[in-house]
View 1 (tube, rainbow, N blue to C red):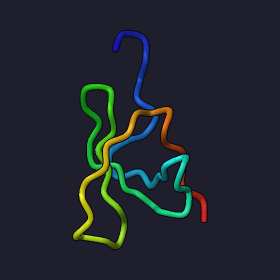
View 2 (cartoon, one colour):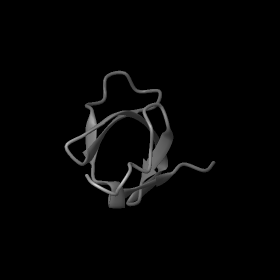
View 3 (cartoon, one colour):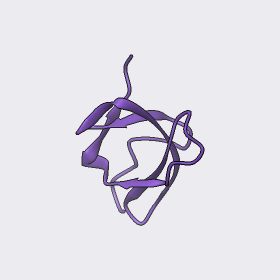
View 4 (tube, rainbow, N blue to C red):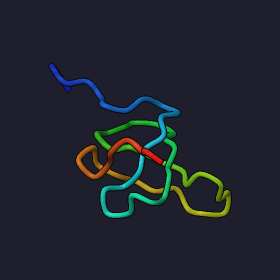
Length: 59
């Protein structure tokens, strides 16, 4: 990842471009993908997204 930094940091509140109503929290960035948890749903599976599939969550 030379010359490129990640857009979102661990703990940032984001959402998927295709599901903007569901807030996600970035858990970790590894191997060019973001591992996110659904906010308020502890039983939901962890979701994995590329940077281009995410945007900042705005309520």
